[in-house]
Image: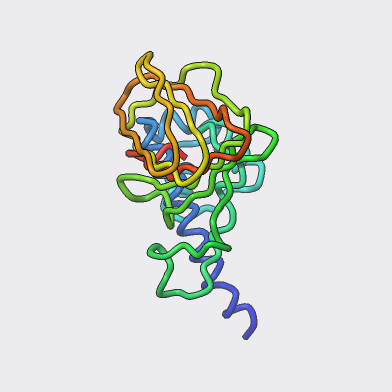
Length: 195
């Protein structure tokens, strides 16, 4: 009887994992064949993973994380204690963490999963943290400064932002930095999802 109580949770976790892998592949414009080639796996296996017919090992998840450029932790912590909230609500204590304090940026996924047309993140930039090399993604992005001081360069122009300020850009190169003595907390929205 205990095994039947555990199995639905495993099924839900596998369903969310499969959806995340599919969403990441599509967000990066990759085909099943390209993923299979890069992972050294068959197209059939990748397709089965995306359809919840095969469960990737920890080694496979590491390979997916490296391929997609996301932290391994993204594929874990799908636990939602109340079934009716699954895919709809993310409780503060159940967010998936996507970074480490050593990098100067810790992000938490506020969206329930990566299957939608956008993702919402709570990004905490440590004092002095900065992205020194320009990044450019095929996305539309927006952010709202909850607290702290935040500077963002969009298309070669620096903007200094404070609490309550917001920004938006699409497909432009960007860099950021926190020049303040306190962490900067930003709610960041990205479409399509990149994590």
